[in-house]
Amino acid sequence: MSSDIIRLLPDAVANQIAAGEVVQRPASAVKELLENAIDAGAENIKLIVKDAGRTLIQVIDDGKGMSSTDARMSFERHATSKIKNADDLFNLHTMGFRGEALASIAAVAQVEMRTKRRDDAVATCIIIEGSKVISQEPCAASDGTSISVKNLFFNVPARRNFLKSDAVEFRHILEEFERVALSHPYIGFSLYHNNAEIYRLEPGNAESFQGALRQRIVALFGNPYNQRLVPLQEITDIVRVSGFTCKPEFAKKTRGEQYFFLNNRFIKSSYLMHAVQASYEQLLPSDSFPSFFIFLEAPPSSIDVNIHPTKTEVKFEDERAVYAILRSGVKRALGQYNIAPTLDFEQEMSIEIPYKTPENPVSAPGIYVNPNYNPFHPSPETAPDVNRKSSFGSSSSFGKIPDNWQEMYATHMNTGGMHLPSDTVAPGLEEDFAEQQEIEHEQEKQHSGNIWQLHEKYILTPIKSGVLVIDQQRAHERVLFERFRQALESQHSASQQKLFPDTLEFSPAAAAVILSILEPLNEIGFDVRHFGSNTFVVHGVPAGTEHLESSSLLEGILQQYMENDQDLKSAPKENIARALARQASIKSGRKMETEEMRALIDELFGCEQPAYAPDGKPVFINFPIEELDKRFKR
Ligand code: ADP
Ligand code: MG
Image 1 (cartoon, rainbow, N blue to C red):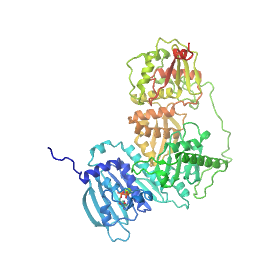
Image 2: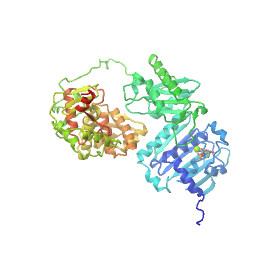
Image 3: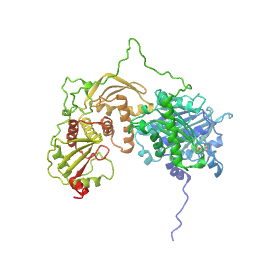
Image 4: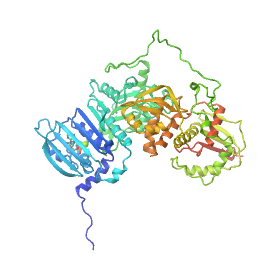
C-alpha cells in the first residue's frame, strides 16, 4: 500500500492560486488598490503607473492609514477590517470586503507598503515579495498609505507572457480609473503614466452629487460634454435613477462612454443598455449610441449580490421593472430637455456661442452638388476635390476591375477547395460555404441592365441561376479593406492633403492609443502629427475619405481598433485597414445610382475574397431559381 497522498498547500502557493482569480492583469491590481484607498476614507488619491503597470503600480492615498500590526495583517488571506460576521455581508458600505486583494497582489509581485495613522508618530514600512515578508520596520512617511506593486507576475511567467500590448493594458487601467473616478466625484484623483501626467481631477465642489458628477465627467471627457448632458432623476421604491444621459444629436457611431453604476459600483448590463437605447426610439439614427452615466440605487436585498471580486454583472430581483423604470426615466428626461433646455448653474463654463457681426455676416447654408459627377469614373485632373462625394476613389489607381464579374462570381463559387479566408473570423462559416458551393454554376450570361436597390440596403441583380442579393455596406467594406490593405503592403498609400489642417483634442485615453498606432495610421494615408499632450493635427487623410470629418473618422477608427484589438487580436495594420474600411464605407440606408451599384459589384468580384466582409459576415447570397420554383410549388 502506498502512503497517503493528500496534503495542504503551503500558504504561498495557495495565495498564488487565489491571486489568479483576483489579479488577472495590471488593471485588476489598480482597481483593488483604488478601492482600498476609497474605503480608507481618502480625499485625494494618486495613481502612478510605469509600462502599463508591468513595472510599477503605485497608489498613494491620504486615508486613515494602518497600525503596524494591521499593516502586517492586511497581507493575510481573508484578513479584512470591513466585515465581522456573515450578517455584515448584507449591509455592505465598502468597496472591498473579502480580504483577498492585498494577499493576492503580494503573492505575485514585489510589494512595498508605507502607512501611517494620523495620531501615530512613525509610519510602518513593509516589503513583501511573492508572499514572503522581506522586512518590516518603522519609517518616516506622511499620513495615509502608499503601496507600490513592482514587477507584477515576476514569479508567474505564464501570466506575464499572457499580457497584451502596453496600449491594451494601459487602456484597461484607464477604464478602471475612469470608473472609480466617475463614481467618486468628491475625491480628487491624479494619474501618471511613465512620468507624464495623464489626469488631474480636482475633488468636486458642487453641493449636489449630480453637480459634482457633471464636473467630473467634464474633467474626464472634455468641455464639450457640459452641453451634451441631460440630467436624470427617477425615484421609485424599486430603484432610484440619477446621473446623466446625453442629447440625441451627440450620440456616437460607436459605443463610447456608457456607464452604469449600481449602488456606486460599476456594473455591466446589456439588458439595461437596451432600455436606454430603447428610450431614444425615433430620436437616433440606427447604429448610433448615446453616451450615458447612469447611477442606480436599489436595496441590496433586491439584488443578487455577486460576491466574486472581478465580476461586474448583476441580477435584479425584478429586472423587468427596473428596465421599464429606466426606460421611462430616460424618455422623460429627454422630453423635458426638448421642451426647455436644461439650465445648470452649478457649473460655470464659458460656452462659445457663434454670433453675427458686420464682418461676419451669416449666409444661408447651401449644398453644392455637381450633377455630372460620377464617383466611379476617374475624375479628370482638374476636377475640384470638393465634389468628391463618394468614398470610392478613382478605381484606376487600384488595379483594373474586370467587367465580366458574373463569370468571376461563377468561378469563385466553383473553386471547390475554397477555405476560410485568413482575414475572416466569424465561426460557423464553413456551412455557408458548403451551401454556396452547392449552387449550380453555369457560365453566367450578362444581364447588364438589371440592377435594383432594395430598401437602400441590398443590391439585387439577376444571374443565370437565380438572383444575387448583395449587402451594399459589406460589399463596400470588403472592397475598401482590400484596397487599404494592398496599399499598406505595397507602401503606396494615396493621401489627400488638407487645405486647412484639423486640430483635434482627444481624451488622454484615446490619445495614448493614437500615439501607439501613429505610424501605421500614417502609412495608410493619414498625415497625423502629435502636437503635444492630447492634441493631434491632421494634415492629410487617406484618399477616398476626404468627404468624412476627420474627427469622427479618427474617433471611429480608434473605437473600432480597440474593439478589434481585444476580440480579434489581429495585427495593427490589418486592424487599422479594417477599421478604416468600416468608417469610410457606403452605409446601409444610402440610395445608390445604378452606375454606382454596377461599379461596386465589379469591384467586389475583383476582390480576393468577395464572399465575406472583413469581419467575416457574408457579403451576398444567391437565391437559386429552383428555390423560388419550390416556393411557388411548381
Ligand atoms: P478588503 O478590502 O476586502 O478588506 P484587502 O486585501 O483589499 O481586503 O485589504 C485588507 C485590509 O487592509 C482592509 O480591510 C483594510 O483594513 C486594510 N487596507 C488595505 N488598503 C488600505 C489603505 N489604503 N488604507 C488603509 N487600510 C487599508
Ligand atoms: Mg480591498
